Image (cartoon, rainbow, N blue to C red; front, side):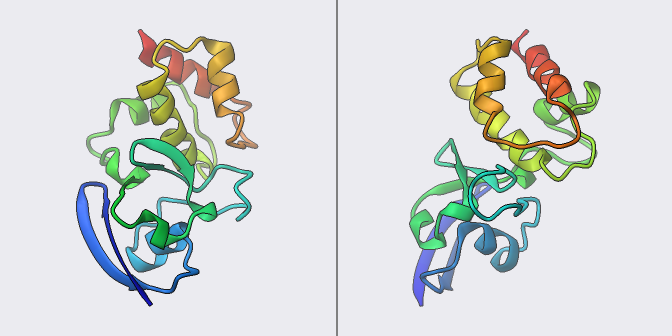
Length: 151
């Protein structure tokens, strides 16, 4: 067992974990933060995307011990049902979600995009979101939601 100290959504945690425990499993099973979804478990679908020290990362490709000393942000840190974050509200307003499985990872990737590429045009938004698979929306509404936030 290895001790991991990390901050998740602004809350400090310290836990003993198996060295092989994935960050996605640490978040979901150890901390009970089930908003981070696990899809392909190969880093292809993007459903497990979280922010690690402010940059998007696939939590299914990272071990929990690699998060030692780092700040992790998950979808649970964005907003509440009664007080959605502007990004969540834009997704809602523009019908940028349907089944919701990809939505947490899509939101976290979009947050990284908005913070680091705030002036991105539609083509760049599509390119930056290309690592997050969505089978329901066709991406058009997701791009519209992000376009609305650029204004």
